Amino acid sequence: MLVYDTTLTSRLLLGTSRYPSPAVLMEAVKSSGTDVVTVSLRRESSGERSGQGFFSIIRSLGVRVLPNTAGCHSVKEAVTTAHMAREVFDTRWIKLEVIGDRTTLQPDVFGLVEAAKILCEDGFQVFPYTTEDLVVADRLLDAGCRVLMPWGAPIGSGQGLNNVVGLRAMRARFPEVPLIVDAGIGVPSHAARALELGMDGVLINTAVARAGDPVGMARAFADAVKAGRAAFVAQPMLPSDVAIPSTPELGLAHLV
Amino acid sequence: MKITLNGVEREIAESRLEQALRELGYCDGPIATAVNGQFVPKKQRLEIALNEGDRIEVVAPMQGG
Image (cartoon, rainbow over the protein chains, first blue to last red):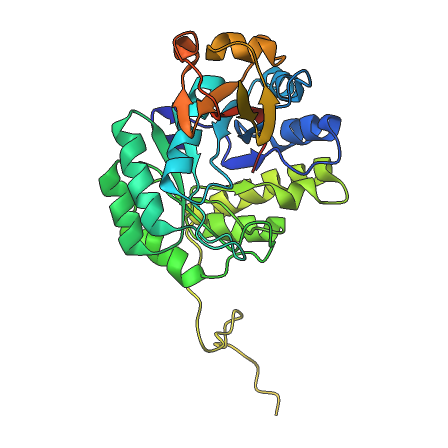
């Protein structure tokens, strides 16, 4: 999968939050085979240096980091956070979140487009967390985004793909744009479904981190993503409203 | 001079951001800073003069989804 100028060998991106321990996080990242983990920025207490410890762990894994602007509710907050992230993580990548609703954590797509335009013009490579709305997607591409990250369901909900028709329409409208489902995936079959639809990748966090065995679940997601992609490439059959016998009726013995 | 550091009021003697950060206990490390909501790049911390009541934000890498 090619995102901006970078080729990724895995179509599974992994979040680093909510794991039972740093050791489990590290093992889960390795088990997932991912090239990319998401990270954030939060207030650092003087003398505590917890951020430095976390960053050392991430760097030891040898994966790319995709900083997010999670928790930002305004364009200004998101843009400022992106600038801070570029300095700390030394990357032009930013997973742009501008949250519009505190309950569903639905993106504020108006603020998202505005922030994306500012950041793209400033040299960032923006990964926008968006909905499946085609008009918003168009605006994000006009702003300079070269990847789109539509939600599957509300963040952390584990509901899966709430609008398969919408995602399919997005795939059809933007055949050349990498589409990575960003939120709401709960189990590996949801991820496989996303890839079967032609999505280019998925970003998973809670479904792995809050599993009984995060390391095993990371491996299961890796397998699901590979299976889903292989199925898409192999071109799935078209569904039918009526039954079609798989065994030929021609030559059936007359036994009445 | 009274400033607010990450939402907590603090008293500092230094008036430049770089020195104030050291006074407040931040050594070298992966941190980013903002003053009154404006990002201050690392290379500008020496030049930024703080004023009474300024709001300083110091952030560092953290887990994220």
